[in-house]
View (cartoon, one colour):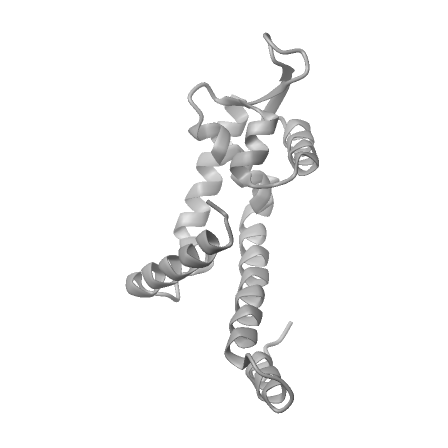
Amino acid sequence: MAGLDFDPIAEAARQWGARWSAVEEMHTVTSIMRAQQLLIARLDALLKPHDLTFSRYEALVLLTFSRGGQLPMGKMGERLQVHATSVSSLIQRLQASGFVTRVQHPDDGRTFLAGITAKGREVVERATADLTADKFGIGALGPAQLAEISADLRVLRQSAGDF
């Protein structure tokens, strides 16, 4: 898809301002949402050769960070901040690729554990190398800009009760 010869978000803000208030807020939210779409597309494209999406990659990284390489699926949902149904879908896809196992918890028959496999650990390493080489798709930003954006978004996340 070819880029436009104008900024559609700036144009939307101009037109918005002729009708309504909160122009800067609308402009910022729309910019964040568009940036998120662009980043997910770029990261998913980088991860596709590894049979991953960014969501599946995040789940594997979470398992990599866990002490024993496995976590209850409910806890994964909490830490990834997604619904239990989404975790089940992620784990099914990762299991089909041979990146995780899904077993019943030995002490709680109602709980299932997802565990990363050796193949999953290998793919995390290769995928991470690709993501870091591409600077996670945000290499156009410098260290000060990255720190400022992260700090600003932290305030937004915290005020929304994210943590």
